[in-house]
Structures are given as C-alpha cells and as structure tokens.
Length: 289
Image (cartoon, rainbow, N blue to C red; front, side, top):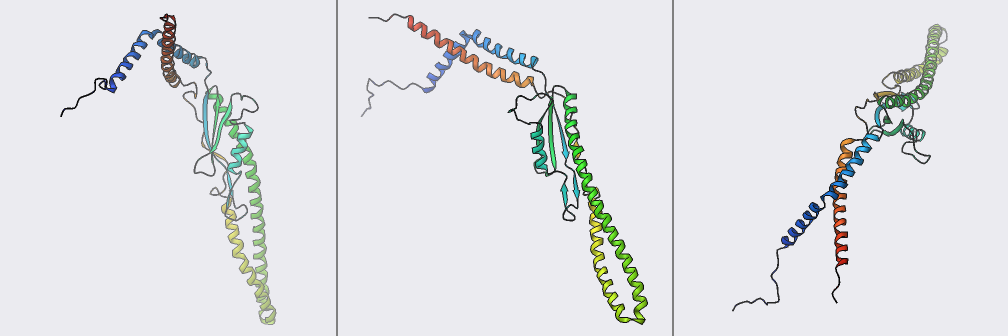
C-alpha cells in the first residue's frame, strides 16, 4: 500500500529560506539608501563632537573625613562623636542643596554628594564639582574646613568639661588623703587614752579607704578619655583628590553612544524612507476596472 499526497497540498518550504530572503532584502535596502543611513550616523557623531567641544568640563574632587569624638561623656569609658554622623550628612545635604533643584539650578562649584561609608559609623565621603581642578579642590577644602572648625569648637567645649571633672576629682582625692592623714594622727593620739573615740575614727577612715579606689578608677578613666585613644578632632582620612580627567564630558562614552544611536536611527530612517517610497509607488498604480 502506497501513501499518496494530495495534489492541492504544497510541500513545506524550509523556515530559514524566508528568513534568508528577508535579510537579503534588508541588506539591499540599506545598500540602496546608504546615503540616508550614513547621513544620520554622521549627524549623530557631529552632535556628539559638538557636545564634547562646547560643553564646559566638570571636574570632581573627593575627600574622606573621620568625625571627631570624645571619650568619657555620660557613661565613663564611652566614646561619643562630636556630631552624630547621620545628622552631619543630613545637615550638609540641606545646607549645600545636594541633588535639590526645587529652588532653581545650582551653580558651580557645588557639593555633589555627601554619604556615610558602608560599614562605618564615623567616616563620611564628600564630593565637590567645579569647572576646574583647582576650584573643585579649593571648594571642597572650604566645605570640610568649615565642618572642622565647628567640630573643633564643640570638641574643646567637651574637653573643657572633662578637664573640669578631672580637676574636681583631683581636689576630692587630695582632701580625702589630707583627711585620712589627720585621722591617722588622731587615732594614734587617742589609741591609748580614749580607745572608744579611736575606734569611731577608725570606722570613718575605713569609709575613705573604700571611696579612694572608686575615685582613682574614675580618675584613670577620665585621663584615658582625654588621650588620643578616645578623643580626636575631625580629620582627613583622604585629602581632596586631584582629578586627572573631567567627570564630564566623557569623549569615549559620548562617541560610543552617538555611534549606537546613529546606527539605530539611520536604520529606522532607511526603512521609513523605503516604506514611504513603496507606499507612493503603489498609490500611482492605476486600478484595473
């Protein structure tokens, strides 16, 4: 028994054959209208070059600072920042209108970004931009210098309070030692003639002996809090950088984008022109009665 194929069924054509014909047609269209394609591409490249030449350069300088801190504020041994890092970041963002255009366009030089470093609680990165390298560095140094002066004033006030506490504690310890010396002399004098009074003075002396270690420990903690291990001014971890190339314009990036956009727009222009030409040609063909 033989299988026969009905005569009205056409054999299937390979799928890739139509695909190949379509690609050939597209290539022929591009070749025929290459003037349009390269005209659009050249226009995109000319616009990119004009932007690169005419756009004023913008340089970016960056610095990293560590917020100053003082020890022994509140709970002994605790280290407290001169200014809360989150407050400093928010204050600078508001003061220099970072990413804020509600009051109009900002003029250069300007602060471009203020942010806390990830994983750090007291390290802040500040970025400034200007039309020249010197202006960017100078402006960033001015911004950080103002912060340092404010923090230095607050730090000195905190250190002054710590020194006052330390002086007061030292006076208390001096008085305690003097009082103990007087008690020792009285106890030695009354030990034979008035044992009862000597016993009372001995109990009073024991109270001072219990207080002195506590005062000495507090003195040691206050002294440690004023050392550089716990008390530091706001300082640079990285001086304002010197950019070697502008942040923008970026010639390589602009030309690459112009090339990609030019190719896309050129191809679109070619196919639109081809479509319009074919549509007009079909409209001119007379319709047979």
